[in-house]
Length: 448
View 1 (cartoon, rainbow, N blue to C red):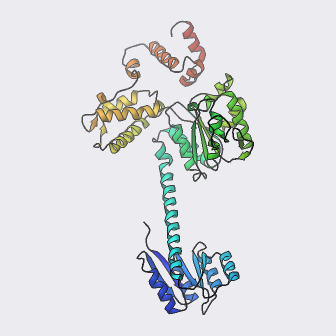
View 2 (tube, rainbow, N blue to C red; view 1 turned 120 degrees about the horizontal axis):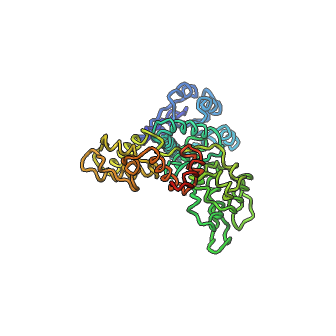
View 3 (cartoon, helix red, strand yellow; view 1 turned 30 degrees about the vertical axis):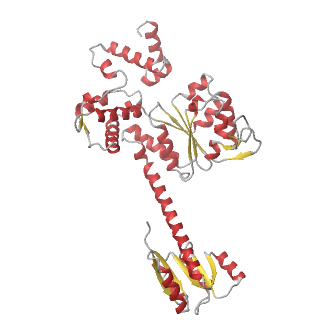
C-alpha cells in the first residue's frame, strides 16, 4: 500500500480553490495543498507533489509558463489544466507540452479531478508493483542465490555468467544432467538487459519429432488436421527476451537445418503460412553430450554447432566441487524443513563425511533428493550417517572400504567410468586425464 497522495490545487479564485480542496480531501489518502499564484506553486515543488490541478489564468503567470517550469522540475509529474473557457487550440498546445489533461470549469470539475487522481494513484501502485516484482526476480536470480557454493570451479562459473549478461552472445551450457544448467540460463536472462522480456524454455527431447517445428515456429489455422486456430511458436513468444533450448543434441538433422536458417536470418515462417515474421531473441542452449563428438559422428550439423557454440560454460559435476556439497546439503535441509514445518535440523560430522565421499552421478538434483529423504528419516534434530541413503551402489563402499592394490583400485575406477559413459573410451580418458591407449591396453588384456 502506498502512502498518501500529495495534491496541489493552484487556483486564484480562493472560494473555488477551497471547494476543490475540500472535495478532494474527503479521501483521507489525499494530502491537498492550495496555492493562489504560479510562483507559490513553483516555490513549493520541493515538497514533491504527485498531482497538480493548475488554473490556466493566474494573476502572475500563464498556465503555460507554470506548466513548463513544473516539468523542468519533474517531467513526469501529472498536471491537469483547469480553464474558465473552452479553447481547443490552447488545449491542444497544452497537451502537446505534456499536460495530463485539460478541463473546463463547470459543476462536474471536482468529480473529473477526483477520477484523474484515482487513475494517477492506480498508475503509481502499478509501477511500484512492477518495480517490486523486478526486484524480487533480480534477487531470486542473483548468482549466489542460483548456484550455492564458493569452490574455485563455481567462482569461475560466476565470472562467466557475468560476461554472458553483458552482451547478447549465444551461450552454450555444458555439463552432466543435474548440474543446474536451467538455473544458470535463468540467471543469465534475469541479470541481462533482456530481464523485462520473456524467458521461454524448451526441452527438445520432450517434443515428438513430428511436432517440434510447429512448437518452435507456430502454425496457421488449417495447416494440418487439428489446427483449428493460429498458434504462436516459442520463438515468437521469446521476442525481445531469451529462448532456452535444453537438450539441443537430441534434435534431428532435418530440424537442425531449419533452425540454422532461422537463427541466421532472425526470421521465421509459421507452418502452413507464407508470412515472414521477424523476431529478436537471445539464444541459450544446453546439453549433457559432447557436441563436437556428436558432429564427428554425423549426429549434429557442424555449421549449426559453430553457430550455437558462442560462449561455452561447462558446469562442474558436484563430485568436483569439494565443500560445496556440504553448503548445498545444509541449504536443501533448511529449505525442506521450512517448507514442511519441521524443526531445524543439522548434519552430524559422520554424515557430512559420508556425503563428501559419494560421487553423485545425479549431481545437485540427486543431493537434494538424498537430503529430503534424510530429513524425513531422522529421529532427532540431527541427521546421522545412518539416515542417509544413496539410490545407487555406494561408490565409496565399493571402492575404498575394500583392501586392494593400487593396480586393483585403478581397474575398479576405469570399470566404473567405462560403465558410466557407455564404454566411450575418449570421454573416459578425458574425464580421468589419462591416455586412451592405457584404457585400450587394459581392455585388450581382458583386465576390464
